[in-house]
Amino acid sequence: MKAMMLREIGGPNQLKLEEVEIPKPGSEEVVVKLKAAALNRRDLMVIEGRYPGIKLPNIPGSDGAGEVIAVGDEVNDALIGDEVVINPSLNWGSDMNKKSADYTALGNPTDGTFAQYVKVPAENVFTKPSHLSWEEAAALPLAGLTAYRALVTKGKVMKGETVLIPGVGGGVATYLVQFAAALGANVFVTSSKEEKIEKAKRLGAAGGVNYTVDNWPEQLEELTGGVDLSVDSIGGEVFKTLVSLGKIGGRIVSFGATRGPVPNLILPSMTVKEMSVIGSTMGSPHDFAAMVKFIENHEIYPVLDKTYSLEEAPEALFRMEKGENFGKIILTIPQK
Image (cartoon, rainbow, N blue to C red):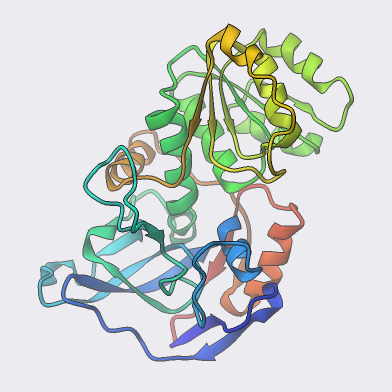
């Protein structure tokens, strides 16, 4: 099969198209012939050596959708031919409230979806929502799961609440806008580009501000009247602004920190407001099943940015690295 193989750390250009053997399923596994895959920032971090537990050589990629073509001895062969989307969370464990110490995600150290075929545990494949194309289904797994757990399971968003999503544009952020709006929240966003704010409005956001303007926190305070729930992947100085914008009893769910640690955080400002800070990452099998059902019930369509061929994966990753995308970047998988 054709696969984008990573043999050396260094950056997107280290990915090379190679011919490798089609994986064989273990006793409780299935093999999926992929129709499409999608990129996540995690892929970029793995390729650049900025992710823990990296194993080489490796086929990156956490997101994918396709058709089951083989099953292990202990798997019902009725699955063969099913159109599925893959849950990238591996070894979550029995406690749905927290991941196990053995938790990993598809794409490293386990070979992932930047290939024509991938093998995964049978419990990790879910029926593809019928209203989605292959590209849309491939865009769903990691970002949709991360957004659902952060917003619903951890953030416990409620209808009528004010929700802030800083740095809109990436895959998770676009899902957060769509999910929160579908649940009846008043959604606000920030971005460095006015066009991204306008796109977020079309997805259901009530408004947003450009964070390159000096007084953007004051603008946001006036616009929102205070925030019940912020769902943040930025960290750094921005996190302190989220605290200042938070209402009494407000929550901040953090699922990343692209701008690094939070400097000089003044804790009394949080304690006086009785605010909660909650960490979140990926999600449990229960979260994934609930997310897929939510997508189906609300007929939500993933936001797609740009589509590349499998061998153009380095170019696609450079686009992500530059922050040029709005929504998910897709890889089409050759069928022969």
